[in-house]
Amino acid sequence: MHKTRETVDRLLGLQKLDTQIAELERQRDRIPEERAALEEEKARLESRLSALQEERSRREGEIRRLEREIDSLRAQMEEETKKARRARTPRELEAIQKEIAYLSRLIREKENQILEHMEALEGKTRKTAEGKEERVPGLLEQIRRMEEEVNARIPEINSRLAVLDRDLKALEERLLDFAEERERQVHFIDVEWLELYERIRRRQGLPVLVELLEGACGGCGNVLSEDRLMALEDEGVIQCEMCGRLIYAPEWL
Figure 1: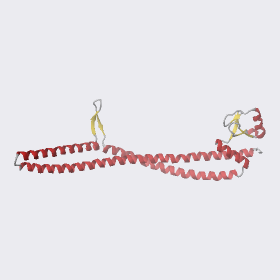
Figure 2 (figure 1 turned 60 degrees about the horizontal axis):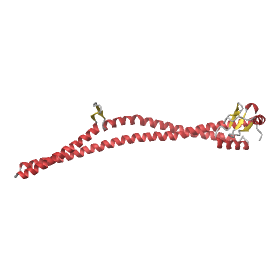
Figure 3 (figure 1 turned 135 degrees about the vertical axis):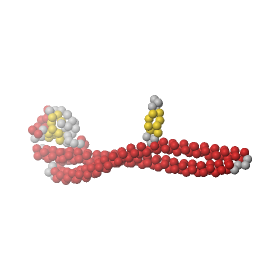
Figure 4 (figure 1 turned 135 degrees about the horizontal axis):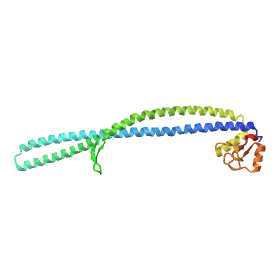
């Protein structure tokens, strides 16, 4: 192969273009990852808020159900109290009083259940191991805080997603332009040199062409022997025996 400055210059131009393309591809490939992370965060926030709201609805529904049951039990107690006034025998009165006591116990149990639901909703105060009082926030407070977080963060996420979509579109357009420019450039490079360049790029990645640095390969640091240095001075470009990259010395081209 005839090695000329023009050939090296064309290969260096192609390498610069490939480096730019690789960087654009890295930027493009990072976008789906960031986008997925934002979508996951958005879904997590909305799911947490939805779960809290569903729990609030469930407890409020339980309170309403218990209140209806208490009303029904109180109505039964009232009927039993009327029966007690009409009782004709001590035995009949005792049975009615037992029923009233049973109904009263059911009411207290359901009132305690309501209290538990109310504390879960509105929060409560409890003592720590050190004997200090601390406020435990309830569902209503948790929902308020969560709504604030969602209302602040979701617009930020949506805004960032819109930016990422614009960036992705711009990067795709630039990559198309670079691909067209690459097609144009390769037409001016000898087929043998182009095939060698592509083989090294597939195997080693970029850079393919490296400068001679203090007698060594600028890619892997392999020190060239005197014979190889003489070959480089004579030919202008040689392949590194260690990494296979193309070594050139501008002053010897």
